[in-house]
Length: 411
Image 1 (cartoon, rainbow, N blue to C red):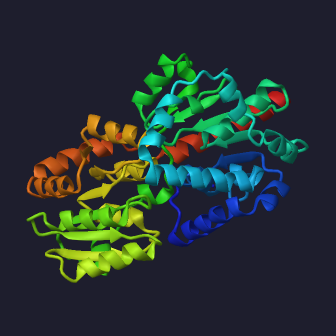
Image 2 (cartoon, one colour):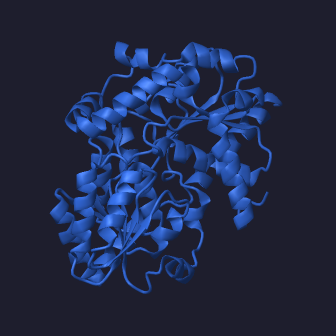
């Protein structure tokens, strides 16, 4: 397939449906003996979304590639997966200081340490037995532990595979760094320099950006979207609170945005949590400015295209999507650790501003709405950082690796 051709809406929907099904059907995935295997995890949704973006691009280029996508922990040990998910979600929601301590204390852990060796063997035997008879030619990991497992198998001579890593935040953590990795795909030049400072070879690091799906590089009929939402020509503030924001803070931030004096519309993505939707709809009845409440949506690319700014925590994929749309971010309540680093990245490059209190969110929103020139300057900086072609870049290296390996076999 011509990779430059844009998919139609129907083709895009079919690609999304096909990719969405992959991580939920492990046995079917492995039964196909995929030559390209993508490993992800569901701790936060960024790892899986990046994996799906790469899978979509590969399917777009080759309608029937030998491709599989595994939710790594869910496959190798469902009980451990549930335990880790519970511990992660509980710590970031109820004990963020504890999570920050864990993240920072392990940020420069020695790759040869016993702790790292232990992590690099979680699920190793089950995974190896599943692929041993028909190993993939290329493995792409969007979750660090999976990358470490593949690295260990390569180091032991049990697996000969091109081992690629797609880093899904704008910070460097030791969990991503392993001796058996052939390519690192990173979100920014800052990260490339940080990896080189840790001794990695420049040629192994590709500044691809973080992969997002094709819709974030396609044009949007903004007038149609505005009509469907009923927001007219007002500036739109897109509010994505995230599943980790306590309900009282969700209400307080919504109220703070509404207090911004300039006429605007707030589009709230409440997600699947019914309580958040109820809070937003109750507030909607007494809001000064227009408030539009949405549940779970699959058109974030369109909502970002019509928005003047995003109010959100600094998740790696949400941050990347906003950059691809040239959308400034007002950052509130990032998850300690990796999202703190994402927030710092946005601020350092003048594409985002961090608010430390609910009231400050409203003050920043008000200041930006009153300063269109400043919003435009931030939007330009955001667009310069965005890499909407990231999935294309990763897919190109994957396919090139397969071609090179096959050429060497026949040489």
